Length: 184
Image (tube, rainbow, N blue to C red; front, side, top):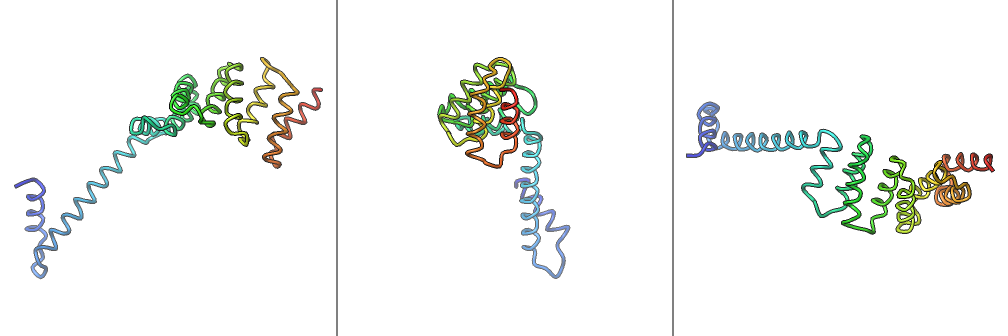
């Protein structure tokens, strides 16, 4: 006799009301065991997913051949200022799918945070080539063009104008264009 059967039998003896058939207690016992099992699973998930990084690592572990988990993990690393790890995760995503504009964009952002503007430019241009309608990629490439390492007002203005073509209500792009016009 297994532990489940012993538990059901004990619940049947203790909780068996005289006016109910004994089978109802077994149904209740199975219900509570199922509820316990599901609660244990939820607890385990909550432990594994206590923050974005642990969630991302769990997703990568469960789906190592998919791009999205690596991007989620890289984004979590980037938000936590663990930029080197973000670069590694974005690079892994690109290795899985070189056509992922989102991964190239994120890698460009991470390189810019490390003041590696040449690599940042390369990745932003790759993201724009893969997704010409990406407002984020155009905007961040414009910001990179304004970095002290590049400071190319003409290219930055062209990128912010592209942003406004795609998103006419983008206030930040308008503010950068106003800044650029004052610099000229």
